[in-house]
Image (cartoon, rainbow, N blue to C red):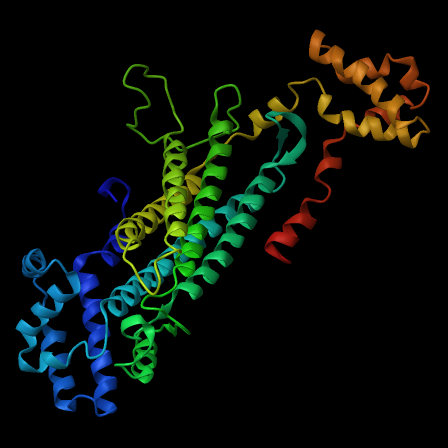
Length: 436
């Protein structure tokens, strides 16, 4: 997590001040529940809230204590006792460190999810706007990087919209799975803390209760969460790579916005490079890389070890901060993307009409020619276009074997671009609903 690829609101979730404030709230809510159960005095719970709630925790002091104790939760509790006074002895009754660490981590991931979902909503709005704008902007579709058949640029945007809408659903499910609380004490048996305390804290923090924890919240939940972030990152890269290809000088069908005063190269003044989408490709690799250690964290020793802890201290902030930045950057790219319909049409026609070969093939089969013979007849003329830069329509009209099966009007009819876009409205209705 570095400032260059960070946005303040997401960074704030992972700041020490936020973490310690969540720790305090968990402890104080637990004290309220224990006071209601008669485990600790109600006045003590009130004092803890009043003094701890008004305090600004001294990060340097906590770090100083931790250097001696070698234990972060104890360091915090010691500092809290300095603030609260004698009633601090009632804090953390029957609880273990993982109760605080795990539940706090999930609160942070839940809050991060809220920001990421907002990011996705803004990206979806941008994609829909560009999809509708270019619903009928015809361009060439490619397979293996080679011209295939016509599509529209709006369909490309609609395809991305549908993918990110699926990603939103994935993140909603992952957020629900991660938003759980565990305050079950050592080895998760509730021996020294009433389950009602856990239920109270969970309700106050808008979390569900973990049905069965060991001494930790099971890490399959976290594995799913970070894997979901990885899938979203892959979708970011997929769209970014498409834009990078479309911006190539030989293609130039779309281009990242190039602002006044922007420089593309320290050596070549003419350069306008797809730097934003190249950056997004790199950031996507980072976010995906965090999914694997999250999966490796699932298998821990017995009821608990801390081999997962160091991993999560890195991947929690880094994955969410980086993905937040990437989604925001991609939204800006889509909103400002420059589209060149004239170049799209020029590229579509670059192969002399070969993009209509399938239609001619099908027309021949409808005229009674076997598929094998029809393929041979069409390919024979197509190869002349590839190798001799001939015009496909002219070659077909000069091929007696083809004109014996199809009239000139029937052959020319196979070159109608509108044929390829006749179901665009149907696809848009599937993606965006009626009245898109």
